[in-house]
Image 1 (cartoon, rainbow, N blue to C red):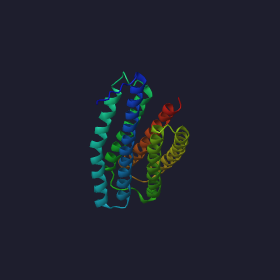
Image 2: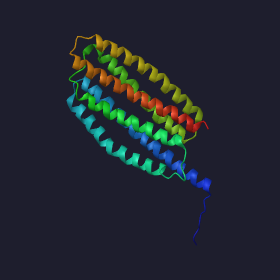
Image 3: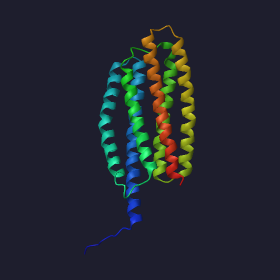
Image 4: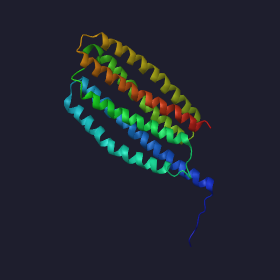
Length: 218
């Protein structure tokens, strides 16, 4: 005996929206792993551990193909405008893509730096540790969004905003210190460019987190 199931328009939207949210969760996990790889690259660079640096870089290269695969899947789901029409989802996906783009841009700029001045190494480590933390909170906030846990999601987003403020303070301090150092102008610019791109990763994470609230508080 065959059974036939009929879905109303609202049921179909719910099914597709759940599929979309699940894919966004998977995408956020890849972004989380990208930030972990960047974190490892920077730490091994500071410690002058070339072997671990190359392994971390290779890991980030591997994640690029996974990111592209999931991004294309998200775009495919979102392109079905007859089922998913909320602009908030489109914005969230693009904010998440910006996180990935900024991670890659930061890793590329690291290759132009020979070494960090020892006087700023501790601040760089503090910077990337907070960046790692904020990426974890973003992934958790997206999981909370999928489960419609609005209170937990709000708490995580507030934590992200607090961490981003701390990151912004570190960025300002680092920038001022680099400007005051006796370094070649080209070296200063490269260091400041890297610092600003690390800040861009944090900013794009905060943008994504704020957009998540629009999806859970409606």
